[in-house]
Amino acid sequence: MKVRQEIVGGAAIVRLSGQLMGGPEAETVRETIQTLLEQGHRNLLVDLGEVSWVNSTGLGLLISSHLLAANHAGVLRLVGMSKRIRDILTVTRLDTVFQVYDDEQTALASFQV
Amino acid sequence: MTPGSGDGTNAGQSPSAEPETPAAPVSRSDELRAQIAASEPERTVRCSIPSRLEMLTAVDQLTQSILQHIDCDDDSAAAIATSVIEAGTNAIQHGHRTRSEAPVDFTFHLGEHVIDIWVEDRGPGFDLDEALAIDPTSPAGLLDSHGRGIFIMRAMMDQVDFEIRDGEGVVVHLRKRYRPHTAS
Image (tube, rainbow over all chains, first blue to last red):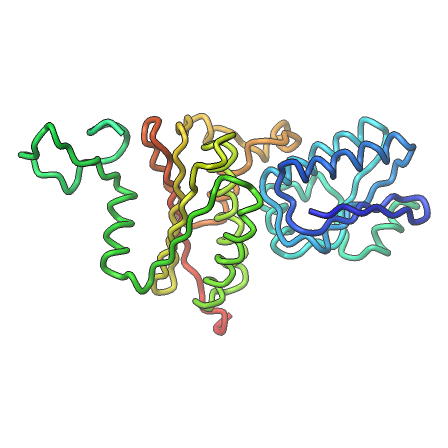
């Protein structure tokens, strides 16, 4: 799991690549999001475009990150996921928790509303 | 395993078997898997990994190769691959916990438009009723970061069975029918 971050306009983008499956590597994701929130970023976009699969532990990480953002009066949205990842969100109904976008431009624009 | 314990049957043992040399009990999952492997070895694929989450990447690559080989349709392939990863995740995180040396075994049987997969750990087992009672789609469950693995497998596969061997490991059996990709 690789984690990169980028600030675009008023949003912080967290770009993930590899597999989101928990374990020590996934802690880097949580720490990155925690740091961004502590730095004052409130609009977080997690880019899953280069994530090949997510397991239930990875979903748990996304949920805890979502709650962490909410506790800092922030929002965490998702972009760029494959059909396989979208299917798992649909089955678990987490598509009712997360705002999911197909493309980054639309996702970034959503923070301006 | 203590002979006669657990959820399995003792199929294959003669009633007159010598008590001092008891054969290991054969569970229903074991029996079915053994029968299939013996009768159709050309349709059976096996792999074993140490209990490390990152090893699931190799299992996923194998699963993808198998699904491509059998010409599985895209929707079923995504469901099967996701479920295999969930079964492996459960085995590693809940079955073996810190025992990274303990193996997790995967057996794939490639039937006629149906695939059976067994995922076996050597962990202490778990309370299946308790696990099945969790509804991660309930209002409270949606924001819980745990408890989705079995739910996901059951939602995505046609059949999911658990053989819990009373402290001697768990076998998860997954089954799904699929359409040929070229027909979808």
